[in-house]
Amino acid sequence: MPLTDTTIRNIKPSSTPLKKYDSGGLFLLVTTAGQKWWRFKYRFAGKEKLLAPGVYPKSG
Picture (cartoon, rainbow, N blue to C red):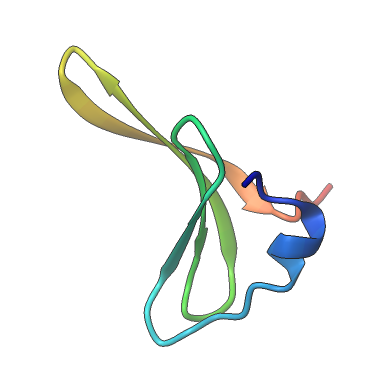
């Protein structure tokens, strides 16, 4: 199920970091402090890579 704005806003921080997956390697990392970071996991030349496109909600 794709992540919606309402779903993301209702995610509460816990004692361990949470990963909420969207699709195609995109996920939202929720830290213990409540920060929400977009991450994109993919493979290149057989090795796993991780991109950090930004934060949620986008500021500016």
